[in-house]
Length: 250
Image (cartoon, rainbow, N blue to C red):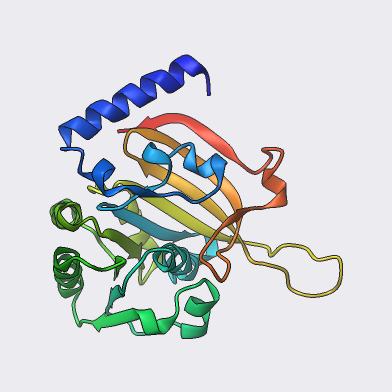
């Protein structure tokens, strides 16, 4: 990125932070530990005290398994208990442990209605002292997302919203505006090739579709390891599978 353009972006980020009260900055950020990804995120990582959305792409648009595992890996790197709000108790515990989130850390809150999932998320965020609050929903209305954002700002707790749809047509709702600080889409790619027969580490196509005061981007990454950390795939080293889009997201 040219120096002049980087300078303009930094100024815009500072102005937006001042307008929002600087809450996200005071809560800090969680770096991915990958320079290519952290460089496109204000503060160099995912902001605490903010809402972040995740959805599946490609063949995983409806089930959202990769999106859930990506969110679980991020939650695993926070400190404190994790509250996971849902309506469908179909999480596979060994898979959560594989990306670093041991089920013993998680408090699962099951509801019959999505409205209750959002309410439980807000209550968990307002409680404080948690590592993260995760919620699985089909729709995230602007008003509801704003309430979650305000609750997260008050306590500095990270909110991770996993968008899970029951049918393909519902995925169109992902384009509607929300108060989320970032919006990600996670698509499953062929696993990493090994020099011997076998199944290599899973790979994801990670798309940063929206970020406040930053640029959209996309990356080919190795899925979260047992510490919840991503890694750039070898195909991204020369930029062939990693590109930044020119448009900005305010």
